[in-house]
Length: 208
Image 1 (cartoon, rainbow, N blue to C red):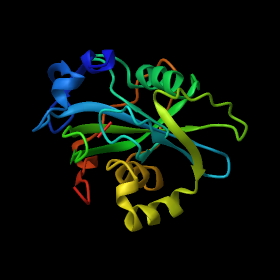
Image 2: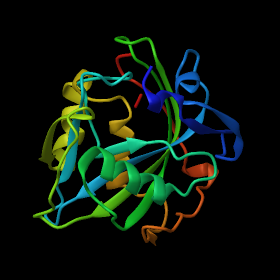
Image 3: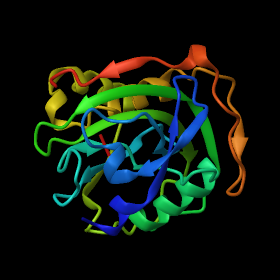
Image 4: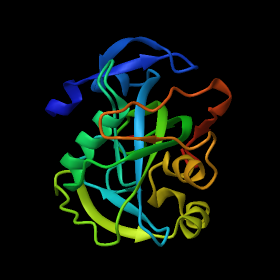
């Protein structure tokens, strides 16, 4: 088991209220325990978004294309602090300003590893320069590519198994934000979500 699997995540109820904690490993064992997570999309000036192909050693959905960066805040930790930490660890990027586009609840079982994703996922956007230097960690990231999000949304319907099951909901929040946009600096915490902003979603063919 990797050290990261022993880190703590924040368990939440259906409205995103903290309900305790569990290790990453325990939260992702079947049948899964709902916990707080974040998904970051880095957006270039031309509107394209950075995707990463998850490394082969990932314990959930390895070698699938996903958003720029994913992770879990520690119990009580700021989303922005946690997201900037993971951007640095995975991509060598940050700190950046992040805007919360909404929240997305999903459940998906990984047929390859038997793990489960059951996450209350805060979707965070960062607008970055076209020449953003990126230094991916090969233990985290197999490949990177910039894509048009509308084209990506269409391709998710054509070839869903090439992508992580949460990516469709993340892209949907980017293209159709579910709250007034708010900007957060590197040490800020985005405002908490409202219950009516959360949708349930499962992998079409069936998390981080």
